[in-house]
Length: 196
View 1 (cartoon, rainbow, N blue to C red):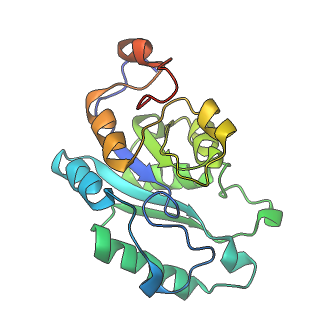
View 2 (tube, helix red, strand yellow):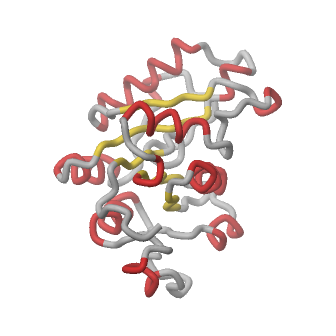
């Protein structure tokens, strides 16, 4: 991990529960509400020339609850509210499908990195649950957890890197190398309750 660039080449965000409030199987653009600080966090990344992407599981498509068109309409609303992303990677499969893209598998992260023309090792995945962190690790990317009330305590405890909110996450990405990098070893064991 030594020598990874700071800031990262790209930051890949989970959509539901990270960028926008989680509305299960949402097919209605009118129900899209950004998470606090999301627009400012993304603006800061763009200001620093960091590319952004979204990696999102949408199992409602595979279950027949959502259409691909509805997912696209919600994604378009996310961009209207938060600005354009450089890459989107969507898994439409149900959990039982056994695909290689659904997080915690690495497929979405690899697809987004490939679309951006960057190495997955130069990407950070920001998400709110353990499967986001697992997908990052499986792809060779770094994971940064931004917990919300739905995040399980054990997921918070296992996260290699975490921040209290999106703006805090972006400040950390722009100023601190990830755990495992020589420059960041002192941050790897921050006490519980810190911004780590």
